[in-house]
Length: 605
Ligand code: ADP
Image 1 (cartoon, protein in one colour):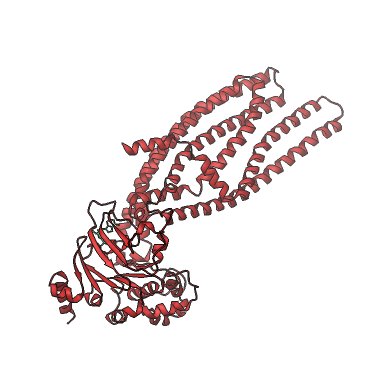
Image 2 (cartoon, protein in one colour):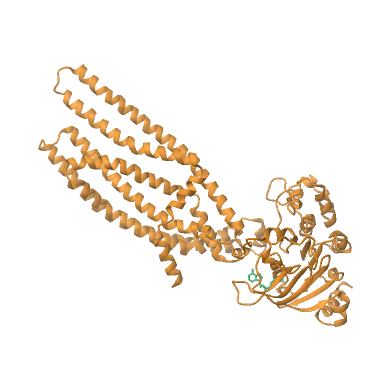
């Protein structure tokens, strides 16, 4: 019900054309002006050409009865030269038009991509976890590059057609007042058919987006290295490509049904129009045979009728095209209208630097908007300045969610998180995140140089900073990078030429270096060493307090031996903290931690 009402509102709103034109203008004022000028010239030239044609024929017809053929020829030759000049200008305008259109379209495409990227960066993380976001994004990306300039074209076509049409109508009115009316009536049904099918296509396009995305996903899986191993080993190739073809066939069938309907309807209305036009032709020929019209008139009216019909058709086509553009622009604005929920306060508090009392979770609860379960319940914990705190617990117990709340990727749905007593929402989010250095379990692997991979942890530093090498030494990445063919200048990953792939453990060392490079008050490592060999892991944690200098730290790890040295260890289960204390305290308690620790210790024996 709600969705239907919303769609109806969208269909009815006509407020989108002007903002779209503004986007076109902003993309490049100069090209926009050039385009408009050329479109106007292209509108005027045909009228001039036809009128010159009439003058030539009339002069030639008059010269048939004069004796002085040279003078008669001289009279007509001026018009011929002018007609040639006009023909040349038409060619010039067409060629220039192509150039301007191509260049302008490129500018608009890049500009719109920029706008979409800005929006994507500003959108909350939450959007990225919602399939509807991807549907909306996909539709916006489809429309963005060509729909706004198309509106400019269509408006220009309306102008062009209107200019030419006024001339043609004036001519045809002099023949018979009813003729322009018949032309209009003949073209109207085609416009109505088009409007009707615009709506059908629009609804269908919205319906098919998830199918399009699914097929794109299958196509993507078949072509990227991330899936290449499993696809071969589990022999999934033809399974996926069949699924891909099934979806494409479905889309094809649905699209064909709509397009066939449209073609049939167009054919029917065009046939009616053609019959009406031929009736008018017959009338003109009849008038000429009866001597009411001269030969020049016959040609003139014949052309005016043809052009007039073309123009009316063009005009109504542009109008219905504008209607269609307006409909489909909803797809673009739906994306551009996404508003971040996590907004900065108007007067942000300065971040305490250094922190005095530290970070505190007070009775924090959280539920992802897409689920009905609570991911966190009644979380109370503190991280004092300089403290190392560890979170342990089974997969899905809420550890990563807790960190995401701390970085304000989401706001708690209950309770609050404070730094020195000030709620996180009172800080500027960018400033808050500057104070935190996080490496998540699914850290990014940038297919850039090793140097850049680390530098991205703190792009306020110069890209060649010595701190990059120091950070790499702290994480153990330095040894890995030293063995690469071009050292720190080696491109990592296999996406680009001369790229060197690393093992997962080696990538992890690079990510860890990125975390160490950041000049933050808190460092958060979510399973930072899970893929490293025991020696490398031991080296990181043995000197951990030196490595982090005076930073506070939150460590998440499954290997309890690595978190043993933490000042406090919290054990999480099912979204709550079930135990907290030092290693010794928790061992003494003899609860979950002690149990897990003993199991792991016995495995390592
Ligand atoms: P851990 O880091 O301890 O493995 P997480 O914090 O990732 O656990 O997950 C806690 C719970 O929240 C899990 O039940 C998980 O399914 C759910 N969850 C995690 N991320 C999302 C998300 N983006 N949307 C919905 N539920 C999520």
